Image 1 (tube, rainbow, N blue to C red):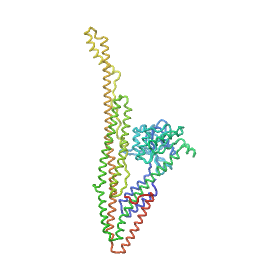
Image 2 (cartoon, rainbow, N blue to C red):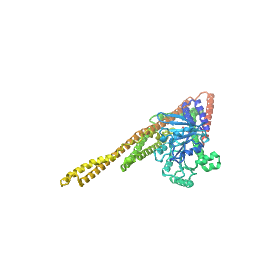
Image 3 (cartoon, rainbow, N blue to C red):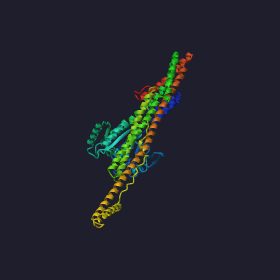
Image 4 (cartoon, rainbow, N blue to C red):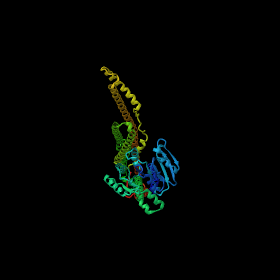
Length: 602
């Protein structure tokens, strides 16, 4: 839900930009309004298989929405959001994006492993709308599939979605303390998401949950992770709501978790909306008042009008220079994107080459026919992890580049950084095919007999002919023994040849997969960076155009300010003072939205 005070402030500022005929500033405020109208505050529920994620979501909203099963897990991300009436929408993303509404009772047929094993239907997500007070302010709970190891392909895909989330809850049951992958996941999440917390589930099943929680807090402190921990019991929570037992609800631990979601997640999103709205309105108000202040100065002291116009002409030249391709911020942006593209591509190739070298060692150490299924799973997980790490690093570097561009732009005009949208690497990985299984030919029993007989016949014949010179028969113990030895040697050589062939074909299949990943992910990375470049270019170009329009208006107002009629001049001064007073009140309301906001932003 949009902040009402912020919406009222934007509407007031929109009326002002319309009255003062500044369509460029109106466009900025309309963007601000659209951002406020987007109510979603996304909370990702992540963790290993069978840790109680789906049951946690059900307990939070007091509804059996997400399917829960002792043996089968969630297969498709399920977003639970507010709606006046219960409804389920299935979403397919991609080239042909489509949405389909289905009955709530049929949800399990699409999002669980029982009805949709391995997500063979290709769903992107399911959206469940429910009339719940917890969700009314825009909270969206996303139940994600179990990652099956936070270093797996699913875990890497989940990692790639972190920058798009407003909060992350890592779910781990009370059966054991945090594992190393879970701690690494939390550490990475802290760098990518504003709110991260841990939830210890199933405290009703494990009497030692307090000791486990204390151990987990110690692990977090050692790792330098400041995430909060909430031990909870979903079973007690659901029973407490059913029986309206306040004491049982307190014992379940959900009161603290719900408070965290309200006061930290939703409240922080509210604060961000207020701050960004205050910045935008202050910037607009400052530019609206610029021409009026220039004219007022000229009207009050006509003798200084010429000097004021000269200063404004200089300012107009600087504003025009900001739009020129030779502007410093333009060079910083173009050079930075080129350097970043090269660095990201090198990083991806380096990661994939390391995976290739390790994969060759694994294939050399064993028979590919025996380990291929495990190897393919390992390879896909390593590739997904490399892609996600590369994507996260690219996002962090893009944010750094944006700050550099803003710093150089601000040398001649203040700038506010845009919110970058860099997409998700998990979408890119969906376009890469699975590892192809190579031909794993092995010698059967009949083939062994044939190859052995063929090799043994030659050996027996050779030794038999040699022994006939000594007076032995063709078939004698020496020739028969030689035949057996030669036959066994031929079989071993054929087995070694086929093993070498299997290894070579397996390595070729691995390299083909890595080449395909390099090709596809390289294109996706370049597309993402071009998207960042366009966002930054359009954002700062718009700021430069707004600044130039404001300066042009100020120059024209100052040039027309001086009038020979004293009465006309005094009346105009009164009008300008009244208009600036209105703009000042608009600025006061913007500052009141966020105490301590800057007075002038652009």
